Image 1: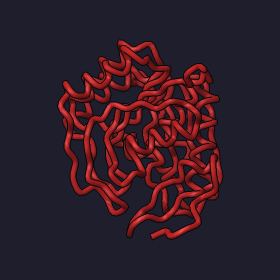
Image 2 (image 1 turned 30 degrees about the vertical axis):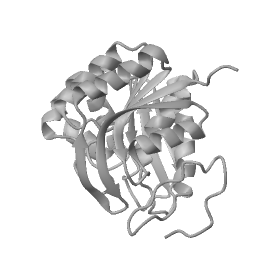
Image 3 (image 1 turned 45 degrees about the vertical axis):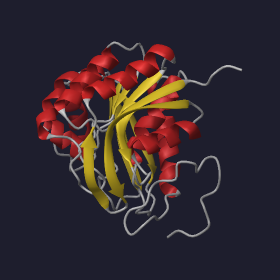
Image 4 (image 1 turned 90 degrees about the horizontal axis):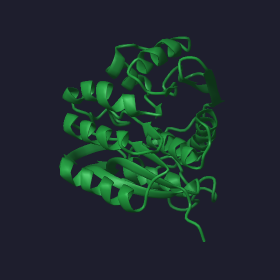
Length: 273
């Protein structure tokens, strides 16, 4: 029996299970690949926000990465929370030496607005991490943080994409989920600077969307690991995330997670407290 495609996530932990490493591994399982992890930080996190975060030493991150890649190998790498310049630069160097596509989710803030990236690390993201990306997946807040470009309407997505592409990723997905919240559609733009793919999906009236960014990036990485070209991988990932948002469920007193297993079984019908 042959092993499934292998995907490595380099990201922080979400103790509430909705985002971060936990969301990444759930997504990979749901999409039929073998997920592996390099933990970069531990957070105390729930449906209300992030109460604390503790970064792992660079040597621990590097050792985890080498342990997995040198023995098991990878068909794709995905990054999430890299809270400091030292971590960003170390991970960028590791990815640059790995012969596999890389999906870079330049995580800046949590769903609740909690900062997850030191301001001193922004330049390292721009100059070291984005240049090694096969696909970068910033949301509108992260675009503004990295480039200064603020998106107010759908045509602005092109300007945002051009600004991110100047830092060197091969492709960028500008996630427009926060744009025009009253619109019936959620619109993303995928482009390599020449080709454009406008990805549209129904906007679901569901506030339980914790983990969408991590989930999309992990879904893209999973599809790339299976051998899909970038446009097909991103389109498939968008469909998966749209279904996960539609099936998102309440947890705790705040924002619940998307439903990562929506494509495998119906949403849980029991106690939602």
